[in-house]
Length: 496
Image 1 (cartoon, rainbow, N blue to C red):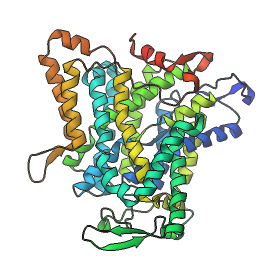
Image 2: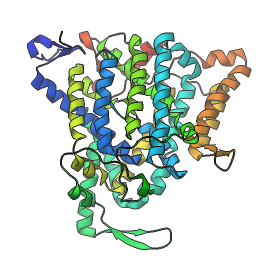
Image 3: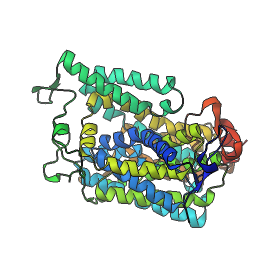
Image 4: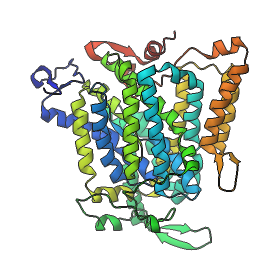
């Protein structure tokens, strides 16, 4: 029995909608799959780059993860699984404490385990238990502190490498993100990276190599775009094996690729709070797809989270970053009205093929630091503001001290990277401590708060939003039904 039925003999009319279990002709499906690759491409290789991992391996594993996900959800939830931005702060914190890429992978592996367990709970017990433990006030705060905790990385690591290129790229990111419409707007980060890459190359020609002043005062000069390793890389082959013995933080000679995880309890505590962000991402994604396809997908919510957990475990076990469902690809579906999971299967195969090109991986790894500075100053802020987005769309009332006070404490701890030292070898700080304080103190405050405050703080369940830039404020849905984005949240939360 075929997985996908041929839609209208392969002909796509102007008002047609292609359902998840349908497909167009394979030629058209391959074209749509290519669009999904472009949509996910920029983020899927930028995030591993920021985590000190191999982008070639990450792209390969994203394709494998997406195929596994589609099977797990029985092709009912069209989605692409790419690298998650939420773990950049985790990697930065682990490196700062002396960890290496295998320690980063080991810590992130447990997030996959945690997400898998949450998926099982939701599948067998329903999502209400998660909503009670992680109400919107708490979830928004955790997502916010994860993003804003990264501000020092921009200020101290990327921006100083080439401040003028970083400033120009930042302006380009903002202008393209706001000025472009439709699908082009969805890949603004990717386009900005290409523009920044070219600008850096031109700067090397016109201005010469940049000057680097080390902490000890030593002065060196280096090209912004150095393709030495690109020239040495093969066109076809597997990603390299990580050279952990000679790996050094910040060294341009680091070889990172396949490696097994190294499990460390303290590092795991840094990473585990990110599970909350992944729950929010996955929940919002499934709700958005449900609205777009006019289908109740609540029965597949647990499967989706569990599958993402499994694929995250698999990806981190071989040395890539964890996966998450991508809002970028929802934008492609909204623009085309084609929800066929066959297009995602094609995109997965293309991504896996990209993963067999070391030359491709070397080009990505050579991205200039100034370009990353311009991108991350916007990207990290956007991650943080997703927390505010969760608050707004769930109508969190910060006039209520129950929502305001514990959340305020947790965010400042996370953003300020406040630490709590237990021993010389173990401490909690930043994302981990901020998350613990937010969750624990919220429930402590709830236990002692007057009944009136508790009742007014509750109501909306955890809904992120229908991600994507939709023209005229509407989301196309199967059957021709359309939703205004502001009404979508009301329907999903049950609020008025």
